[in-house]
Image (tube, rainbow, N blue to C red; front, side):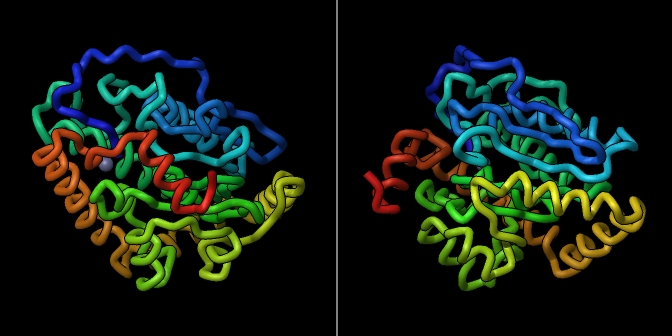
Length: 300
Ligand code: ZN
């Protein structure tokens, strides 16, 4: 989801607070890919997206790395796609990694459609199919676009204070671009998750199998490392083949085609919002979304 107000000037000034929105660290056979925009709760702009892709590339290319862990620095895993920080870079072209054209010169709904094919749906599928086991270490908020990053990982370990939420139905959008909701959760729960957009606790997510293991803030690193080391002790090819086999089961159950269908509904919703409100997010922005979410969660 992106703010694409048609009356907004395209030459928006971008002020990055960092040149390195992703850190890459290793510990023996484990690569840690760490989202590092804690000031903005790791909101994902394109700068971060391509830094994530480069870090994953590095981990995949290094034969000494057996397992990849995705983390978020600071209090939260990820607040989702960047819809309002000074580093929001919707109207910037990057060195694309998939075979899609540039988006910034495209008119109307084609702009977001082209961009999100690459940076959201395309990238998430690419990351989901990495040939090494991946673990998402989730603390605090894992919201909207943040869900996509956790869902592409093979395993999710979450702290007991973590929560998951897709609030974009407030924007008239039927869930985030990588529509795994109906595969991660039972259908009735997935409807509730999107339509009501409430926070789902890590414990409830664990009950549905969306979270593999529960941990705590104090033990998250230790628990994730133990799991990663165990995975690293298994044959490399066996891990890759197992991952592919189970990903294929999901695809045979229709995950890929359901996502393709949903992606077009998602963009019909963006376009409808542009037509009726000149804003592809249904008139919502980062501030109003945060306020609505807080109110719903009963927070101050
Ligand atoms: Zn979108």
